[in-house]
Length: 210
Image 1 (cartoon, one colour):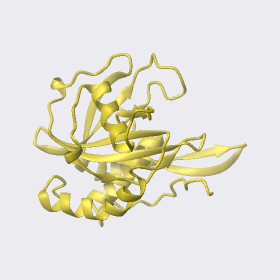
Image 2 (cartoon, rainbow, N blue to C red; image 1 turned 180 degrees about the horizontal axis):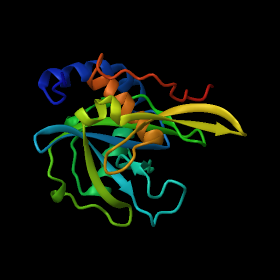
Image 3 (tube, rainbow, N blue to C red; image 1 turned 180 degrees about the vertical axis):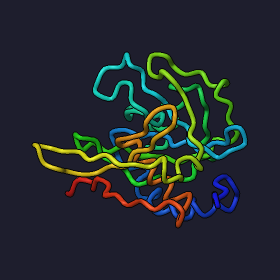
Image 4 (cartoon, rainbow, N blue to C red; image 1 turned 90 degrees about the vertical axis):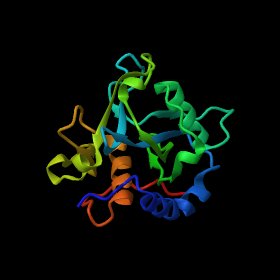
């Protein structure tokens, strides 16, 4: 049975579980932050994703991502970074009151931290968004139900120096494949929203020591 991800009870539970991480990480410096937008799309709980513009520089152009980006000096904290970037990329204004908390950071290949911020943005019509075409090629949602189905879950093995290094989750059969750090953040989110239903069996990357 699918959990009611947007219920008041679910919100209270998630806020309580995230309270410690949120207090610890909110004002800690981080290279970047992303918003994990939990929404109601056509009456169904879903996560909102973006397809990064193919015109961007760097190795992640054209990848599926959550809205977000690099911290700017004027940002008060990682929550402010995530909300500002979401407004700039999608024209979607999310208030701090809608933020449920901060998930565990993930680390890119340069070991820079990316902090995921979970927020409920309520009922959402994708046609109402105003994506910045310089940064975003497409906006789409994946229902939580879809992400929880085993047939839509997979994994990717990564090698470094010709040897197996680590395995990351991947989510399939949507408009676009969700992989890399975005898939790891998706996994963190599903573990929080659907405890006992989503059962990860993969080894996610560990943060760098020290």
